[in-house]
Amino acid sequence: MIRVTIWNEYSHELRKEKVAAIYPRGIHGAIAEGIASSDFMIRTATLAEPEHGLTDDVLQNTDVLIWWGHRAHEEVDDAIVDKVHARVLNGMGFIALHSSHYSKVFRKLMGTTCSLIWRVADEKERLWVVNPGHPITQGIDRYFELEQEEMYGEFFDIPEPDELVFMSWFQGGEVFRSGCTFRRGRGKIFYFRPGHETYPTFHNESVLKVISNGVRWAAPEPEQAPRSVPPSPHPALEPVPSEKPVKSSN
Image 1 (cartoon, rainbow, N blue to C red):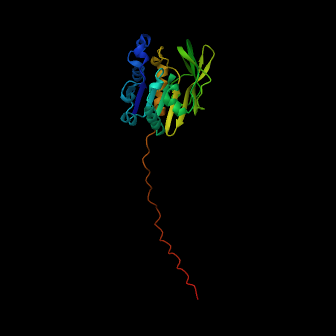
Image 2: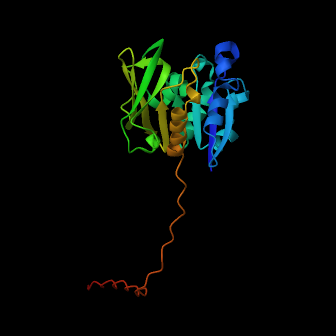
Image 3: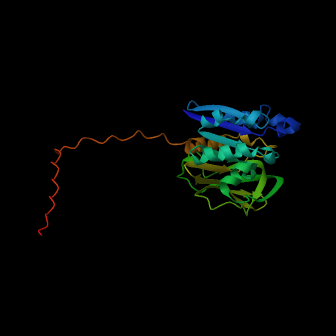
């Protein structure tokens, strides 16, 4: 069972009727419903909860943390950021969605500005699979399309990804590294670009499939049981007696 926590700042849904109409249970609720599986144990957490819903107990019992944030990055307490960062280094998986590229946690993990070019233009996005053998792309065709999305364009100021999984093309001609993996300490990180709040992206089957695959990929591997050393088939050798010291003659 993979223990998944979905974190959402849960701000736009409470302020904008358009967003609330698309995500009446919040973006976190849509993702939770969309990736529900017999091998996932899912909980959600939001910015307004005490400790942003990420108490020590929650973090210690989370295998993969999914993060969506946008307008409230700077409202996330630095102490919580440090705790999440430490858990990733210790093996917790982390999935950053869409504008979470600029979250405090992701920037701390990357060590760069994570800045990019963007434009809200209601453009079609085509996400190309550029690593068809990767576990995150399993069950996805050569590409899939989102009829309307926010444009993100290069240059994307991140470290060189360990693996590039998806590349996006937009109607305006821009391209973007939209699916990237990283490893920090013992933890696996997946950045996945789609998910602007004014579009029904998190109701899209391909998007939800990618997130589900990402959870399974990012989950820490089960701890291996200590290996016992089998008894030797050879009898123990008798210890070699130490050489007696030679007496010096006077």
